[in-house]
Amino acid sequence: MEIHSQGGPPGAVLKREWVREHLLGMIETRSAGDPIPSERALSAELGVSRPTLRAAVDELVATGLLVREHGRGTFVAPAKITQELVLDDARSPRFHAPIATGVWTSSVLELITRQAGARIGRKLRISPAADLVYIARLQRVDGIPMAIEHLHFPAELVPNLSREELEAGELYDHLRDRHQVYVREATQSIEPTVVNEAEAAVLDVPVLSPALLIERLTTDTSGRPMEYVHSLYRGDRYRIMSRLSFGTSPGAPAVPSAPEAHLPGLPPGDFAAGGGILSSTRGDVQDGG
Image: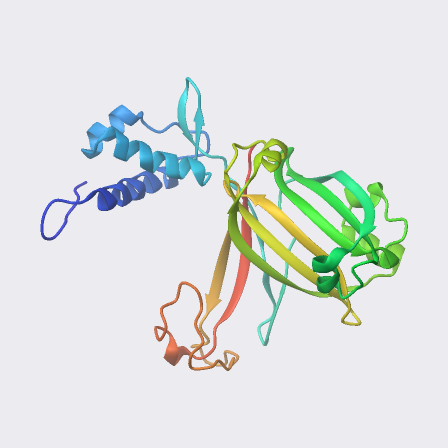
């Protein structure tokens, strides 16, 4: 395989990207747990320096596609458990989330009642002095630490919320059946971050490891905010993927959009003639087993 570059020899950025693509191709043709060649062998095969090769491998280790084992080598990371949001009805952009594969378990790290404070009070539309139930939970998949959740509920909505409810079964089922709180919809945002020392210890990752910060504000059937959550998901184990429908097929629903509308990752104007764009999103959680 050769690197072709116009106007001179390839630069370091191009070399690294080419090495990365070569490694990705290698990963796709191997099974979980299969070894990849040593850095020495790969650098000789690809005709690049050891530092260039190592930087590309480091990136794929950090993103969870490769796993290093001290004294043994580098291996293809385990397969992924997938959860996807899909359209309930082709005529309406509403989604549901099928249960993800793998065994998900929760353990409560902290459960206290305290004052809401100004920031959380604004989000939940309650007084800063109002009582708030705060929960920190650790989510595991097949026993592997995956995420830390920080949940906030107005105390009047969930009197006597128990540790057992938070660790067994679906929390929203408990809210409905035991507390008569009926969830309607949520607004969620996702952004990259890194873990601090305390979070790293809980998630069993190095300090400053990449992570995804997911914030969610949930409302009940009356439109009242009933839950604010911010969660930290391991960046080496979790990624977000979107499926876009450009509405170009006959009978596809028309979704109006402003001329200046822009979706991240899509250059403005690329799909201007295609009408509205619907998207569904899924989270891939890499199995650490």
